[in-house]
Length: 280
Image 1 (cartoon, rainbow, N blue to C red):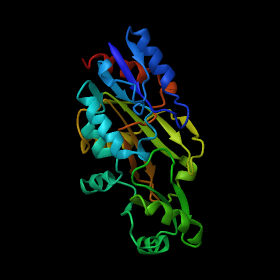
Image 2: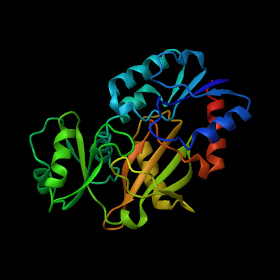
Image 3: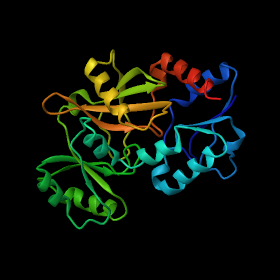
Image 4: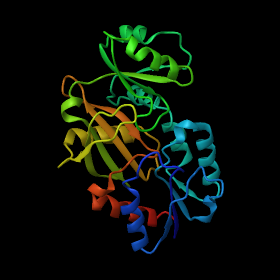
């Protein structure tokens, strides 16, 4: 098969998943390559299947990216599919999942151009320590930790980003400083491994380590989250955090271009290769 692992040009940071997945696909006999979605010379129709991977600049041109996904799906099999991309590209999906009964990190969605100050929002929510981030964003772009006791420090950042984008406000969870955010990797119907991530802001470097096991509570939350999401997924990453009472909540459900931390799990790579091989 001719397989595209779709990325962007230039990459905003190194893709740790590319080498293990590309190598495994080629070892399995496939012609696997890494075209960029934003390369006008790259033709998705030249491939039997195109898998969205390191398209990490999509948040700068979300409408153009969705349009590209729809065009690509017209000439090849695109995974994850355009309907998944449209649903997942705006983090307002968290509120939809919350309404469906999925435990989520408390989230306030503030629409672009809202006149409220950051201090107003924090006061309304009753949060002294919070995280603000764009509703359409990748990595840590635009994310900032803010304190109600010093709102001026984040106000300029808030006003700059809110002028052009919807923003999310969430409480900063103290337990994250000790246990981090947990990323549960799901490939073709199964959770394969889990990663612990440290908090990351202002495009800082990501610090991760492998976790030994996935707990039953994590599995239950992942199943609930994926059960309320669009169907037909090839891959997903379920990011969870501990609330102050120790219970788990969904922080993000990454279905477009998440790092899947393949260097930490040979089984995940093998499962991904086998699933892609069954697509056509």
